[in-house]
Length: 512
Ligand code: SF4
Ligand code: SF4
Image 1 (cartoon, rainbow, N blue to C red):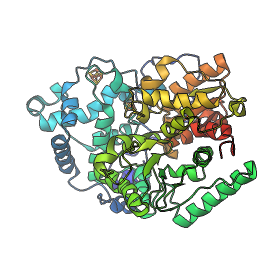
Image 2 (image 1 turned 120 degrees about the vertical axis):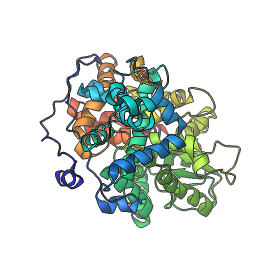
Image 3 (image 1 turned 135 degrees about the vertical axis):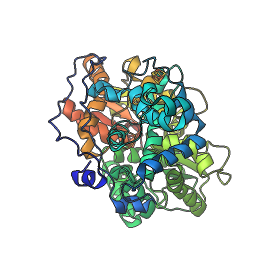
Image 4 (image 1 turned 180 degrees about the vertical axis):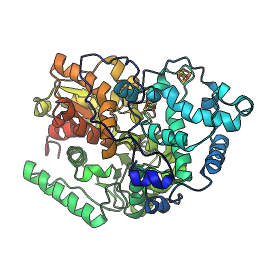
């Protein structure tokens, strides 16, 4: 938290940050010994009033914040029965304690999922349970004060909402839902997080996380077209705002120019080109990501997602395909239908929406793409399952499709593929360490520590099988790994998109 903001909100300023050590890669993903307080200094910057007010949140901490926070918690308990159940049923069995990558990386016991939940649970007990009202701290009920609010702010922004802990909880308690509720409460009292809220505001104003206006977007797409033509000689197009196209592609804005993301955009374009489909991007829906989920706000999620509906109404595509982005796919798969659907205007013969991997695999299986696997012979490839795809959605029409479909696509375009250890993939995958609204520079040291378990699994497969490419289907994973892998002496080029590999293998012109 910025010192000035800390003073303004009356919260204690964080201690000066010591130089953080990079965790050592020893070959094992350890069960850490507890070291108290190691993560207390990680603080995401608090949003300034102008950022908050654009989202209709109070600009700074409101005077009666304790009362307002408790009132908001009461509203959320009414609205989400699951939240109350999660707060009531924990038996403190400890199964979740060592499952969080931030605990493994920081060793701070407050990053154990159950301890994170308890930050909210103690307030819940104090104000909403009889035993808490009568027995107070004897039953873990604590009144909300500035010290506890500072802990909320710190540790609820050290949860990437990856849901790995919930997999190991015998009761399925979802810490992600609790941290979303905590963030929603903090927003409602004027303690929003700068990174997420600034981005949401940018989407409302301009249309995407990167703040690319339609002209800049069109220029960027033209540049990519020129690059593809220079590289291949083929006139592969990236159409924008074409009406009545077969397919509208909604993809994260990072795909439009950031590396390695743009390589996947090139891959999608080559697939569409070879399939001979009439497709388009939209300047209205120029962002698949939706940070409304990270702050637990369905209102913000809906407002962001409505741009997709608006684009469908404007352009009248028959199908809706979503590019490589983990949390975006969760929202598209699990929420769009109720948030902005139904999609009666789209062709019911196809999934509404469909993941780009499913789309590409269907073409591969039908023999509609000519592929040259040898184009990727310099790589031994592994795949990182993104949390929001692995544990919060599906792909295709079969259980486990979210695991098999991307792997089948990869195996169709490379000769050498190997999976990481079982405990680090599929439903047990570790987060990249940058999800859930934590992909911000002031949290870089935390992100490195959070990435550590997955990087260890990657290092192991690099050492045993000479893996040199980790394929990803998430914009946040791409941004996070390219930034943190070099900290572990792994080149950033090891991280790239699934459609980066596809794009290299597509033989342009072969099926035209
Ligand atoms: S949801 Fe993920 S980041 Fe949050 S506590 Fe659980 S394991 Fe940790
Ligand atoms: S695994 Fe579930 S019940 Fe056990 S301590 Fe963790 S949250 Fe509580």
